[in-house]
Length: 287
Length: 287
Image 1: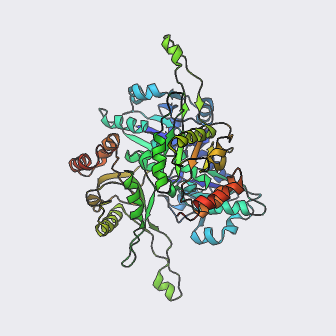
Image 2: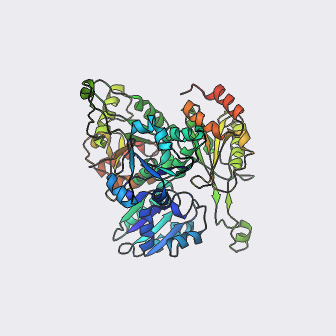
Image 3: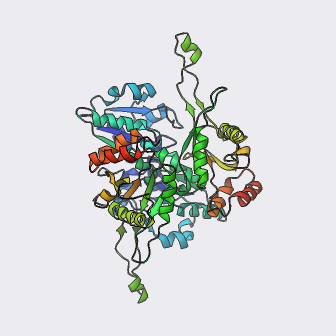
């Protein structure tokens, strides 16, 4: 049996009681470590579980899944995923391979907290979110703006957009690679401020005012941990917000933002007077 | 401190290890028992936690929240919520009351699995979902169709719609109430088949073909439990699907359903040949 077990968002104790039982008795335990990261070190997990954990990087999951699945038709293998198992398509891949294996490998999935719902801590109603988008790090020459089309679609319906921010873990250094060496770059995590700047940059090109200076948004950091941080303001204000350590995400507010949502979110405002006046001018009464 | 603790979806062991620690030491433990239900009895929870749990029905949460919050500025109170704490706005209410209390009551939230992400078990990508809608039980005279406008909005963007199905717990019998007595109706849980019938009924009135006979959809039951069930087919096929015990939900597929999603979902099809031919005719190539 392959168990795909969600670890939740923050630390070693966010695993479910049921998941912990499986981890403690499984034959092997893998930790998927590239689409998201926990806020604690691997050693902390291992100490709490009382056993070693094998790090599964992108290469292993995508090209060496046979290794992970070896013997799983007879033994129990646990595959740990930060957040909720099905929030990343990689895990659908793995499940497909189990189904196609000969003999087929049984699979069980233990859901857990995901940023997609934990973002409800902002006070924004999960019913009022449209499709989720991802924001990648821009470079000098590569500024993919397809996120803008998606948030424009959500905005046309008055819906909020959750923006998931890029993380770069175990990325090879390209110059070293050209010399035939593999050296990994230090990990990078996009901040709310970087995301807000990139949104503003594309909005200034497109001029649709979808995520302009005065658009309201909420930045979140380390949701689910005891030092989580939530900051609300305009996109312009958020370009200067410092929410500290990773992981960060951003929600662009939709025009339908209800009075009850506003009442809660304004408690996190950088400048409450400004937040209130923009909400009243541009958002109130659109639902 | 008020701890709002998500219990996840299925049973007593879906609580996080962290949540369990708090439940075992808190001064009082409440269980919110009307917006969703676990698949196990209260007594099973109590046996696992090793302590009594106070049932909090709608009346208590909405009108007697002072009782729940009493002493929470000094002692620890645990408020348990099926699924994820912030998936229902009630809990935003409770959090607002903590903030406004004198002295303010500190609050911590432990996220957990929600149907909003567990539905990824169908193989449909969570990135391709639009806004979530609710479906209530129709009566002879009351057939609220606002859900149709929302799914039409999602459909216009090619997005999937998660439809959450009505549950009726502790509803007073109206005839008894007219005689001055309070008698509660037995609990009712909407099935995938009932939901599909109601969708078809409204689509036949509106004639937009948003959720017509040949629209593809996926029914899910008891997600996250070891007897979860997933069934894919047309809305018409689903009007006859029997997915057994509650809780059920339904996903109406958007036209952008990707080939990778299709490849996974078809494994759950009632009639795979039919599912494939409709996908190829109406869905393939829309993304």
